[in-house]
Length: 141
Image (cartoon, rainbow, N blue to C red; front, side, top):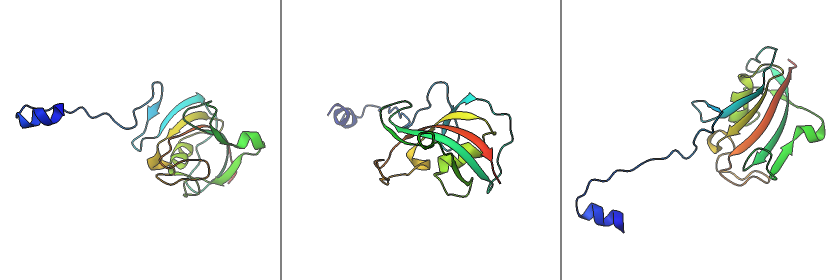
């Protein structure tokens, strides 16, 4: 009502736009909106698009270490293996892993735009921001 009254009175209106997904302190944000923090530096090389890699991960809804863990290769004691950069996983994963070196471990925050978007997937509701702890274990070629 106050906004409508100000507009009707011809008063200037200033709108502050807050990003829907603000960068978290201590994290680096990429152009796509992916955020990451290196927990452990790697010593190996970076994978190239199409190379098969092995990665350990744990994924949460809401925040890291929350009670809303939805998946973990660590619980299965079997890293996930796939050709990186080929769309076999969500875009946020491909982007993060192509930038990591073997042995590197990161926390990554994946916004819906490079995650599952507005689709519900298993226990993940539409529009979910995903939180992962990911380690690039090997390039298996």
